Amino acid sequence: MSRRRAGPVARAGTLFAFLAGCAGVVCLGACSRPASDDDTLNLALAASPNKLDPALVVDVDEGRICALVFQGLVRFDQSGGLAADLAKTWSTDEGSTRYVFHLDTRMKYSNGRRVNASDVVWSYQRVLAPSSPAPRPWVLSRIRGAGDFSRGEARDIEGLSAPDDSTVVIELGEPFGPFLSMLALPAAMVVPREELELPREGVPGGRAGFLTFPGSPIGSGAWQVAEWERGDYLLLAPNPHHPRASKTIGKVRYRVVPEAFTRVAEFESGSLDILEIPPPEQVRFLADGRYAERIQRRPALRVFYIGINNSRPPFDDVRVRRALNMAVNVDRLIEVLADGHAIRAAGAVPPGLRGHEGRTPYRYDPAGARRLLAQAGHPDGLPMEIWQRDSPEGNRVLEAVQGYLHEVGVEVRLVRREWSAFKEAVSAGRVDAFYLDWYADYPDPENFVYPLFHSRNAGGGGNRVFFRDESIDRLIDAAARLVDAGESARAYARIDSLVYDQAPWIYLYFPEVFYAVSERISGYEMPALYLGEDFTGVDKAPE
Image (cartoon, rainbow, N blue to C red; front, side, top):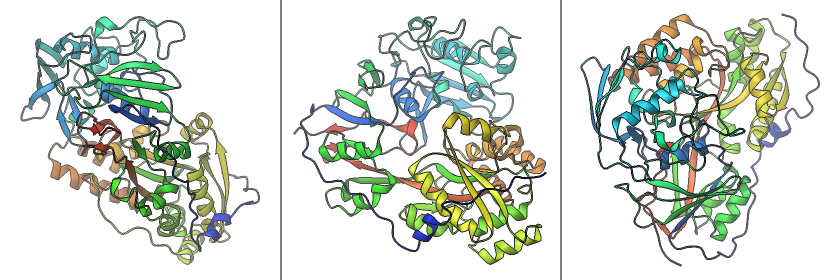
């Protein structure tokens, strides 16, 4: 395929040269703290929730709120494990295809009605219905008969039933290891049918025949929506009917604060009680005696990478892809750009998940990278484009990568686009490479292997690098059927190693996440997964 050579690299090495020095830190002075309601937990969202119907939710902030307001049969606890939610107990057969859930009969919606088994069946049917606009029917698609129902070929879902008011039976077509985790996702959360209506014109998610909430949502979670001013704030209050309803926090107020440094200033002034510390501020907070002992940290279930289009010459040659990995000093990127607060990625499965393996990463070896490029037929280097969404963090990383690749003769042109244009071009395979991250929907290695590398998902399904290997496809399919944790861990570690050897990405790092917690707050534990947020055990001391 003929290729247009990239134009002049205007900023090649600008940040690359800076890596020899130290990164600067922006400092904000402490502000006086305003008085606030003693029983109100004050938090911030980076983006305004647009919809709080769990069937329609796809983004992190909306999912976080839904996990507080609604319940699934099971939920994620703060460590990322599974805990009882609507279901008090459950069991499965020897073949791991038939699940029986016994509901906790104490659970009630915030309107006072008890949750029953038919609510679960109806909520699942709503997501899987042929007319449903729900974007994630795959959460429930492994239930036997779900496909026939979604295609309009059956009136009911064969593998889903409610023998009585407090029992739900789910049968799968075949074993699926992460199935219980799927049931903790928003798409599997349960809603009260009587509170839903046909949407008015202009209401997000509307499609003919699809019922949704006409106003604030009603769920059975430990919190209920008390006020919702779109674009401004969201106020939650305890659901008085929930057995774990907070007795110490009267309100949770989320304000929409898009700018990271504004959120920092608001925390320092006392207007926010919990802050996710942005990366440029982490060093300062850790060094500040006022905050050092109030900081919680976890490895994020998230990976940053530069995806390489494996189907596009010359990047369809594994030698070229390996050379790109060898050309970038990822350890130095982490040291300077992430202030050392990240773990180098030598695979896609993050630390903290079974299947993560501490394998040897690609060695930083510019001379070796040039030799590999020459062996692949590119002794004088080659041009390439790397696409990105414009962001301060992405800009810094890619300017450094641009400089490293320039050193081995790869002339990189950085292309910045807004999200929709970026996503469309990348998913269609029209770009050489792109900078992106992948955030866990559920804490299972399957979520980092199947979407990202199975050929079934090539393009918009998650495998945006168009990686294709039939033998690895078969291993991924087999691993998904494993229910034994040890066998599953070994299988996914092997798959991750095999994929890593083919270098479909320039592997970067797994970040750490830092939360600063006000000295007035006790009992808070940052969650391993955003869906595991829980404020029922939090207390706030008065001024």
